[in-house]
Length: 112
Length: 111
Image (cartoon, rainbow over all chains, first blue to last red; front, top):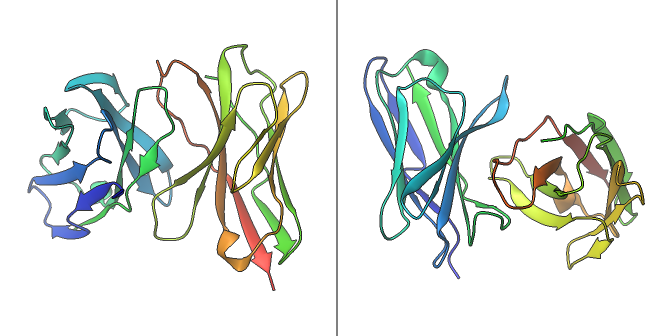
């Protein structure tokens, strides 16, 4: 069974631009979560979706948004990029909300 | 969710058992203990989880004390590929709150 797929793998953007990251969960998984990882803050929770509904949201500004589609695929968007948004963005899927998370290898975003 | 305390780093000789401790003294009765690990440049990998009984799978064993205030992840025969950051997390079983990662333990397996 294919794992969680995140695209693109690497991305370079300029301050002020916006970016959309994509996540394809494991087949049959209905829950998708997003995390941001930086050397200083570690892994921080962004959002969690289940059946197209956002169930939980982390403590990030409104520039960070996400959505989940009917096929469970998910996207996250960051608008008006700042240098501090440079990070590894990780997506994880799970069969149900209380099932273990399975992570992709992330999208590394660099903002210049 | 309850907080966890882990040593920042540990070393283990290749082929020996690696025992990674985790303290979760404020754990609630309905909170599970989860273990994940993250190898450099990869996403975290699920290892094992448990509520109060000891658990074993093909990767590791999880030993939870009777009072549930601490647990130990055991990698029975550590290899160089087990070098990673190991995260111990407690979470309410019904998933009402997301997984919150701490700083974890950086395990170095030495040849």
